[in-house]
Amino acid sequence: MTDSPLRARAEIDLTAYGANIRALRGIAPRAQFMAVVKADAYGHGMVPCARAARAAGAEWLGTATPQEALQLRAAGDRGRILCWLWTPGGPWRDAVEADLDITVSGLWALRELLPAARAAGRTARVQLKADTGLGRNGCLAADWPELVAAARAAEAEGVIEVTGVWSHFACADEPAHPSVPGQLAAFRDALAVAERAGLRPEVRHMANSPATLTLPDAHFDLVRPGIASYGLSPSPEVGVPADFGLRPVMAFKAALAQVKEAPAGLGISYGHHYVTPGRTTLALVPVGYADGVPRHASGTGPVLVAGKWRTVAGRVAMDQFVVDLGGDTAAVGDEAVLFGAGDHGEPTAEDWARAASTIGYEIVTRIGPRVPRVYVGAAGDAIPMDDTGVDEDAGTGTGAGTDTDPHRPGSHHG
Image: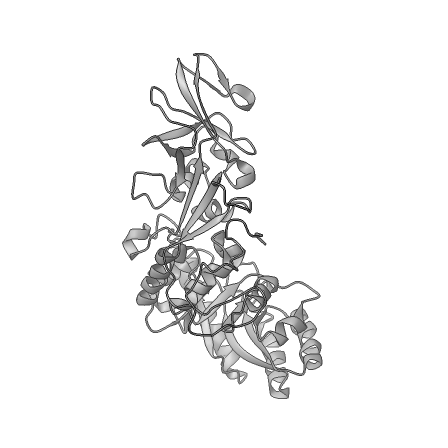
């Protein structure tokens, strides 16, 4: 089968991704680095980004679900991986046998994990998560001593090894928020309880992207930047990416599917929320909300076509939207740039976030699976990974972008 031109693509600049990780490591030079690659690396492609992160020096990878972590193992990654979002039923034994670092946020999870570790005949690596004020996953202070004591007893038995204690900020993207010092104090209290119980974790960590960028006291032994590593700011209060030497990694582009002359008074897209004010030229961009274009950005979403910013004319549909070119011309097949790094006047993901009243995280993460990821740049020498789980010539690979990339155009996007 011959390659055909792409309807749309998300270009992932692995050179920028690696440079972002090195920049972030420079901000927290005494801490180990966890590259957070959950949610398909925030839409950028988990396996290629994991390779690039390892090449850039990331000692750890972080995933939300154990299934994500197991996918990395199946792709050949042999380094440390932490996963943190568990539900009853595991897969506990698979995680133990894969040498994952397993987050335990409550006694129920520890009670499910222990028999799985015994059945596997291996010591499970466990990290205890404290809820210091986010109110989400994690063990509250009232229950923390009991969880710590149970974990210490299991460690003494040799069933588990407590490799980490960690927590997560609620408002680090608002550096002056009063909850920030309160959570730091609560985390130090949780660490003290663990130490008094006899736990000696390898890593203590709390710093997400904004805390890595602005709160040196929160760096501890390891930092876990997520969105910042993909070149987006956690919030306007923290600053813009360039303030920290970061560059957006993803660009979203499409080929115009139609260009036509239209009369004045023509209603555009569902509901006719836009009507042409005069004779004009219309261009059809063949991506829609099924591809991740926010429907909430109907009438406001920016796109670069024919050298100028345009705005979505009317509603974003499932597969397409229209832009009004005014008196300008374009041709079928010309490139429309929804967002990129902004170097050539194109909108950024942050511009789309403002247009849709959301955050940059959502814009890049929601780009759907029928948009091929095309990898550009170089990741450097990476730990090679393949879909069979075989670690081929470890340490001598050529990095991301091999034929086994699940996001390469023409291959299955898992």
